[in-house]
Image 1 (cartoon, rainbow, N blue to C red):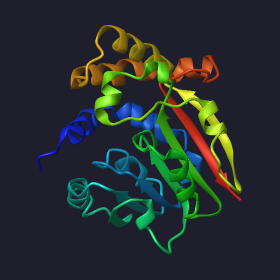
Image 2 (tube, helix red, strand yellow):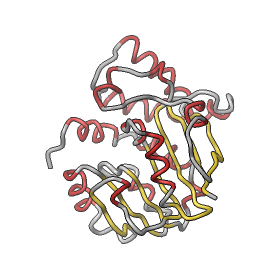
Image 3 (tube, rainbow, N blue to C red):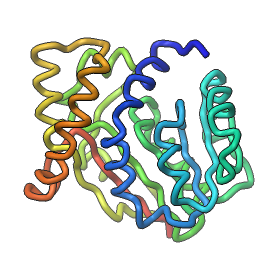
Length: 231
């Protein structure tokens, strides 16, 4: 299947297996044997990892071509319950233990409303798991071209209205990536990071980030991790 520009970038970043595993690892205690909705599944790069631990996984993707891609890719994956083409507003009369929102919120102008709409589909006691790019100071030409409205800091989430829910955890990951991305923005600022650059970051720098993140107590990083619990 021929993918569009965003599809090509998702394909490029699909080589970042260490990073994706590191992201999912942050939420491992929330996923085990749960009924999970993944919002914005793209080409299923995170789905591959998520499906190993969950009880049942529902995919939601607004792009029709990506949906067809997902249907073909996971046609033999028994843990995937349904694949929906649409937005969170199109999911009716369903409830989930967990909603996964990885690298999606930054694409949506009405981000607070998106969180509210997601929380409506959570069971009481359920969790919304979020990973977004961090720090507007890192906002680059690549962010603009790929359709990112913004990058996030802790203070942004603390201003969101989330009703009868609360932020249970919020912290940064990939500290080395933060500095690499800052250098990328200053000296390259390309709208299309090369696959080789992504592979170098993933294979060489992510292992160092795992160590440094702990040493600096997750005070800075290329991504922000958020866990919201519904009561």
